[in-house]
Image 1: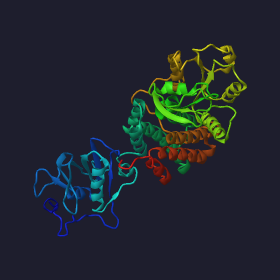
Image 2: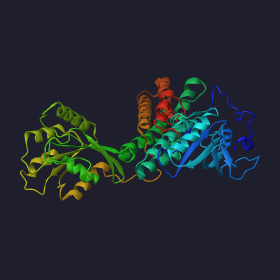
Image 3: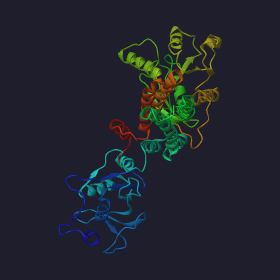
Length: 481
């Protein structure tokens, strides 16, 4: 069996392609995760996507002049290009550009799951002047082709990596253009204000003087106010978007690992009566109230017995400092020690909850000693789970900041967007301050601040190109997307 009959190959058995062989511009990659699964998908995009797909495909319904109908799945066989050997029974779909994901011609070959078959098919595309796509290159082409903006490209990556319904909803809102709509409103308002200033500068003799009070009002109400809403929404719903980091700390044998296991619902950490069992941080994630929580069970904080334990304690303190929330575990079955007091003092400036452990045993100290800590306090027994539900309720309240999940369609920006919004906000605030204090005296400086604000806003959706930003965005993608 050969491909010549169906693909009009030349006498050498190779399909002539339109791309320059020395500079192939058609890319290919496996778009599905590695490993066993129902199907694997090989995606091809570029000027020679259709020719490549046809060269590697034998339709089930044989016809000398067969052409794939756009956006239909065609049953057939994937072929080894040189020999014509059948590799697998597959489905081929052709998406002609610009109405495709990348805005280019795209072909997808759906084969049976497992890495071997997909890799074999991918290898055949490389024999036809395709090259392996770089990480995120399909989405990069969608961005460069104008199908999506840069923030929507980031949203695609966020959707792929989302762990919770809230994370997926937030990403989908951006992908559907909600943030772009918000940005357009702010940007257009800013452009109108900047244009008024520019007109005054360029046509000073012909233009009636600017109404500075009205300009200040426009900047305040139509630019700063919606900017601050976007910034506040990020702070308000940040845990739902990015998750939260938590660390369990306390002296050795306080019950940290038992609580760690109870939270996770399975035995992740080794539990022993011997102090110092945990010598390095153990990290695991779980979902609590719709938020991705990344827990770290740290080494016991005490006087180190050797260099290894000393390093573990050093890392434990670093982990606490880097966490969004600290769970300080104090053993109530043993008298409070100077080390307990030292840890209480060391973590006083962190957002924390104090878990008083081993409450199923006879207490050795009164809870009144913690009255001045200004931290939520709960009594628990990881062994019997006594008080565990109340502990989780308190923990959930701290994790969510008392905020419910954002409603569908709510814009919650990422860190890069927030940096740009804050920078734009600062420039507009400077311009507004000049207008209020000096009126028309510094119009060129006002114009400069507004132009800077526009520059930062345009970095969010990629209207202003920055190679380093673009490289950073698409480096987070997997190959094949």
